[in-house]
Image (cartoon, rainbow, N blue to C red):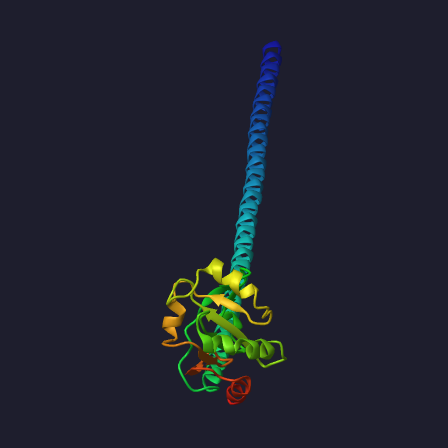
Length: 251
């Protein structure tokens, strides 16, 4: 009995031990499962983080594409704007050239003859007169010399004409030191004593302008239209009435 009881207790201990073993196994499994759960949880977290990061990268790329697209759009707009501006400038330039050509053609048809040689000469007061600057006005230019008696005889009449309201401008041209003419200083002193305040004298100091207009004798008159065309060159004296009549036929 005693042994039997002992054996029974032993069996109980063994049973308890087995139970404890199983419990230990369950606890071990539970701990393993817990760790697995934690790993899975961490994995899921990592997966979500990766998804967020991936989404963020996608959003970033999308933003970059949108930003690039907007930049391209603005660049395109600026490029188109520059092209439009250039086209407008080209059209305006072309239009301006066409208008200028039309004006020049109209001017060329106003008077018959060749264009007068341009000149820019200063008067006794140092003021410059240029033929090109007078374009749009008719010009009467008289070439003369202080030693020419016919020239001197017509100065008073010319002074009166220059003081009137005419549709043409009057200038006279002398060449100091050329063809027996006085020096510039001596000419001015002499001319100032005559009192012809309306006669404007221009100094062709090297005689080049007289040569351009083929002046062979004094006086010689040049009649220039408002278009700059040299309509007529006439040697000898021309009266005030004759000057007006000639310009009446010139545009």
